[in-house]
Amino acid sequence: MSAWPTTYLGKALGITSQEWTMIGLGDDPAVAASDDLNETVERITALLLVRIAAWVQPRGTFADLSTTTICRSALVDDNAWPTSVDEQVVEQLKKFVKTILSGYNDVPYHSFKHCYHVTASTNKLIDMVLHRVPGEIPPVTYGFRDDPLMQFALLFSALIHDVQHRGIPNRQLAMEDDELAIKYNDQSIAENQSLYLGFSELLKSDYEKLRFVIFPQREDYRRFRAACVDLVLSTDIASPERSQINKSKWKEAFGDPYETVERKVLKQLTGKPQGPVQATPANKASRRMSTQSILSELSIDSPITSAKGGSGDLEEDSSVSLSPDSSDNEDEAKQPTGGPKRIPPISSDKFEVPLKMAQSPSTPKMRKLKGTALGDSSKTAPGFVEQSSQHSEQLSGMALKFHRRLSTAAAPLPSSKRYRNTRLGLRRTMDLSGQSIEVYQSSGTRTSATGAEVSHPGEKKEPPEQIDQLRESVVMETILTAADVAHNLQSFDHMAKWSNCLFLELRKAHVEGRGDCPQNNWYSNQIGFLDAYLLPLARKLDDTGIFGDARGAMFAANVEENRDRWTREGMSLTAKIVMEGERLFPGEDESMDG
Image (cartoon, rainbow, N blue to C red):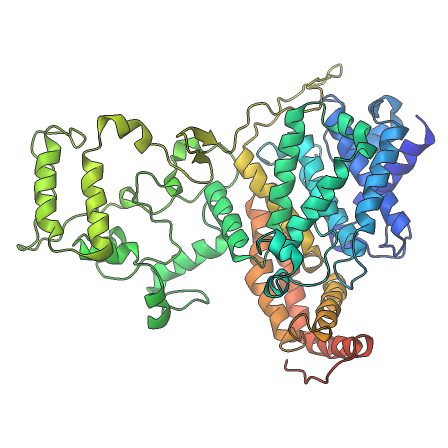
């Protein structure tokens, strides 16, 4: 092996060997964060080269696909390094990395230093998932540990995710009718621009051989690009639409997150709403009619009401699904074994007390005719429709619409029976022609660029883990969104450092007339961000199960520890950074409201 692979392998191994809480810190110049752009280029190039080697080499070349194992194996075995990844490929990759890093603006927070920290943190999280400890039963990763192309896509996305960020929030760009806001219709403006720049550069002729090595088949590139688009857009945490998509994907993949389950359990125990959103008359009026109120107007007791013997609205974010076409109630039989158990949505068949008509003499019952099957339209439908029409005269508004749909569902047309079971949503869509499109498919995925495998004498090789593309996608997005704010999930030194950088960036924008003053409530806002966003995110990392039973809990523990220290030291740190902001970016004097 020539000298250059050894140099890059040593760099990658050194970076990966740092503890999670110490990424980029310390006195060792080989791993401490650097202000030198060229040094940062070398480091990120090294990390990406390892991911390319994992994808290009036949499955089985390495004991596992962690950066740690690949580097150690290739340093002692010359044959472990792929011959197709030669100096020309390395130079093209290095040029690409330098072009992207040079595209990061010189702003206090979203600079190439932030890019490096996110990329190094992403690499560490990948390594923690993939590295096999002898004697340890590997956790379920939904195919990610045997999917080197997606591992590369995740690290690549970390590199490009904030390129050319101006240090101005998306909402400010939208309010200004900035050219980028017009270009991307006010949606994830900075993130869409980063994707455009990253892929526009990658597709240039300068990187032809690099692309040939990474994407031997056109399908490889399409899958890679689709993953990168989802990953980078998922980092736009300030977008309500994107946040809802992320939440919906998580719920479809794993069920309710910890906070939602906790809130529902507490509500059942206490009979009172839990969480920051209180059910006031004002916000009740602004919401759509709840399932409980619809059933009430239909004179149907809800399962929860019947079971408890009392009344009360279902929680606004509960997973009630009464539509046969809803994608919220997928069959539980489709769940793969292993990993976190999905919490089933609440529906009528989950309770011992069934839905029933109220026993009021004035209210006709919807009952099945004796001796007929519920789905027999020739016998059941007339009686059902007759009584339904009588009952419908007493209804109005949404309750009437709901009642009509129930009546229609009782007697579907023969030709529509097939499509009644076609649930449209995150997993499945349909085009204008009526063709069903399966969004998350595992067919056609390969465990290496060539699809080849190697085996070693005396070694019992396990089959690759089956890929669940939806869960794998959610896992990857959770990793990148965590790495994007990794400083808060690491040590307090990290949190204080990057919190100060963000303050200065927002202060600079404010002085330029492009945003609000950040010093107002800065101390309390950091606590709110830790509680409302970071702690749930840290728990999601654990809840995926990909870090095993022990390591996953450390992320939430770190957030809680940082929160405790911030409550003790945050006021003094806020006072210092406010003074520093006024010195670096002088403007009108503003009083600090902690």
